[in-house]
Length: 166
Image 1 (cartoon, rainbow, N blue to C red):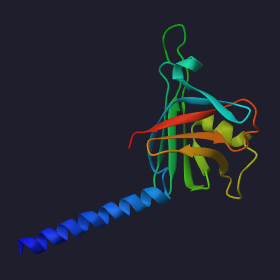
Image 2 (image 1 turned 45 degrees about the vertical axis):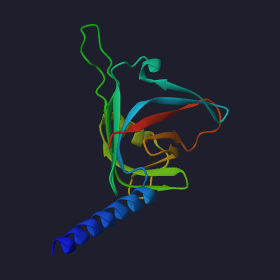
Image 3 (image 1 turned 30 degrees about the vertical axis):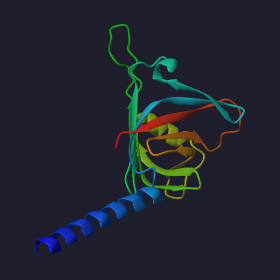
């Protein structure tokens, strides 16, 4: 009886492990990511990695969460007025669909805060449901990823740089 129980337990652990590895291989972006800085591009080549301080933002944050189907981000680059109050309301957004294929992340952004609403309003690439379609070139590893707008023309640009939290 003990051997049968042990065999079932080990088989279940192997099955769960294989399913998790398979899911991570097909969807490596799934998880919780913290932006820690940016990668500077010049002439289509990454030339430097910069932390938040390089942008004059010592207390900023941005977090992105990808589930199987949804994406959400929230962030704020804290900007204080002369009295010390944070005058930046931050930004948050939600995509009710995303896809990752051949190094391109496509987000179908639905709604968000005031800053997000402005970006969505100004975006030219919307689908028939009014979602802002944001596409990024992705460089991803097991514990980091960077995203650069796919319309990048090879000039100077910055890619957001994230590390995996979960």
